[in-house]
Image (tube, each protein chain N blue to C red):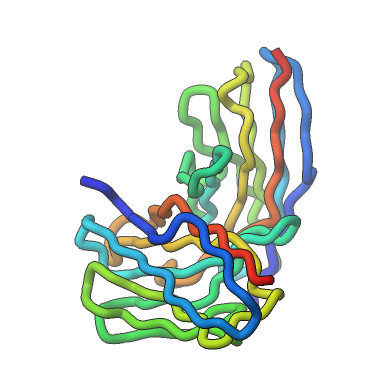
Length: 112
Length: 113
């Protein structure tokens, strides 16, 4: 089955700096890579996703890059703000997207 | 539009007790999922239901049963709770054939003593 590794497990940045979270996956058939943000006491919420036919996708301060050859993808948050503090999960799935395999999560702390 | 709702929010059980976690969605989604979240292990799929009337095992199904009661509701049952089932449980739903986005409920925090 699919295996998704995520690094780092914790990340502290100063407000205004950039944050980068990296993930690798094992199944070359995976073709959909979502990123979820989980705030304290809440369920995860999708913030951005990318499909395997695209190398990069941006949405305001958030961007995701995908390297299919190396089987890794990354989340980039620029100009971080305190409200970006949360746990972020990467994930991968294939085929009909029925089963999604999640990474172990990164706790991001943005220091004002 | 409440999205995905879960009950209860918190529960404490003794080893061997049984309980059912309830999940409902009002988005007319076909697929529903149950995950558990443990520190350092991310979200692991317990069971999922691709459509009303079907259920399939995920990564960690042992000790659990599910019922897709109708299109809206998907319940998770622990027949004989064990301390290893102490976790936060999340239900999610997704519309097949279109968006791949899974929508999560707020979670149920379960402690088994």
